[in-house]
Amino acid sequence: MRQRKLTPYLLIAPAILFFAIYVLYPIVHTCVLSAYSWSTVNPARVYVGLDNYRNLLQDPYFLLSLKNNLLFVVLSIIGQLPVALLLAVLIGSASPVHRFLRTLVFGPFVVPVVAVGLVWTMIYNPGFGALNAILTHIDPSFQGRGWLSDPPWLAIYSIIFVSCWRYVGFHMMVLLAGLQAIPDELYEAAKIDGAGHWDAFCRITLPLMRRVIAMDALLITVGSVKIFDLNWVMTQGGPNHASEVLATYMYTCGFSDDRMGYAAAIATVMLVLTLIATVVYVRVSGKEEVGEL
Image (cartoon, rainbow, N blue to C red):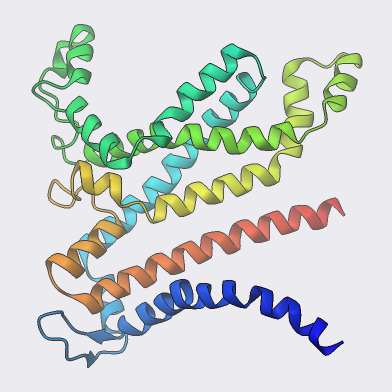
């Protein structure tokens, strides 16, 4: 009897050990390191308490990175969630044409981020970029427009657009999985009652998709908070930190400026933001579930 009670714990022990070594320990270690001032050149750690966090509040580049990350979260949700839901509804059937269109929309997600960043950097190029070449035919003022450099504030919006373009196919598939879980009988009953497509969408699809949409919004939020690769490939946070986000600034502080404790403090802030977003979405979903019960 005792062996039977121990068997479940023994089965999950490898997973718990793996989680503790590769997830829990790095998180705790990073939080501890954020209370020290140290570098790879001088590994002697000096305890500074919360000084790294106080310095972050007075660091204009950190505040700009935080603002850019929040902008990334808001515009990514606005730019990806409605479009992904619309595409999931419009091309969600099993017809060959819809399967081809889904593959076309999902395609950018399987392309490596580095390749996507390099291609779009060339498309945005003010000299030979395809975007300026097309837009110049409409309005000559686009001639020589520097989408990643001039004006500097335009760079973050250009990167967000590329991010939305790459990930909208992935979120379409997530939402499509939720749509396919809705019984067809509900739509057939609504059709018999004389409901149109719009009524069926508002009264059946949206209410039953709330949890899936909330989960997808959480995925977009977490992905936007920890975005690094696309920004680094396209601008490395430039020009003059205009497209800096928390992850690129953390990398610069840690591996370029050799301020490891300061970089650990930025990583801890990113962790806290991610946890806050997760708690908010879970509580909202939980309230909906309680309300339904």
